[in-house]
Image 1: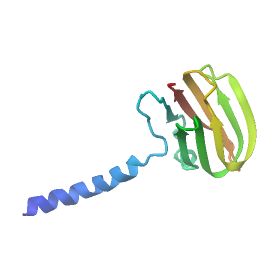
Image 2 (image 1 turned 120 degrees about the horizontal axis):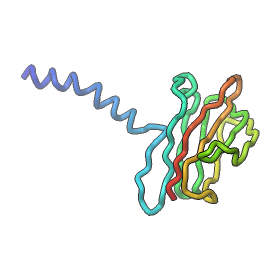
Image 3 (image 1 turned 90 degrees about the horizontal axis):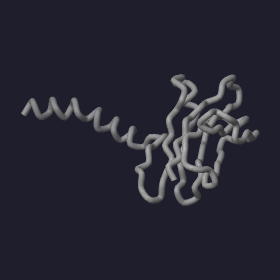
Image 4 (image 1 turned 90 degrees about the vertical axis):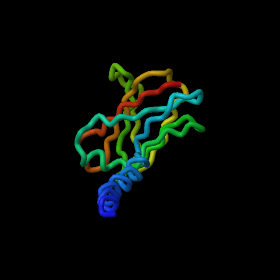
Length: 128
């Protein structure tokens, strides 16, 4: 009887952690006919990654939905060569970027947040 309780006690934290990890704000989408977007944070600064509440790809509207803790002062969207596609001042904590017109490929989404000195950079892989 003790071995079972001991094992459940060790497994329970892992099960709880898997529930939280399952709701990741930067999901990998499977490669199906509808296509998707894969996000990979480019920064290792945990303080910066904590500033993004959510970043999701909406398959129905073919747009990236972003919500941050602070106001987004500026957004930059770059191609795989890091050449600017567009830059836009924002001024709110949420943002929707339509990616339907861009070809498959690797892009970089950079966000400058209020009271921050550096951009948060995220690699975006579009597979449709």
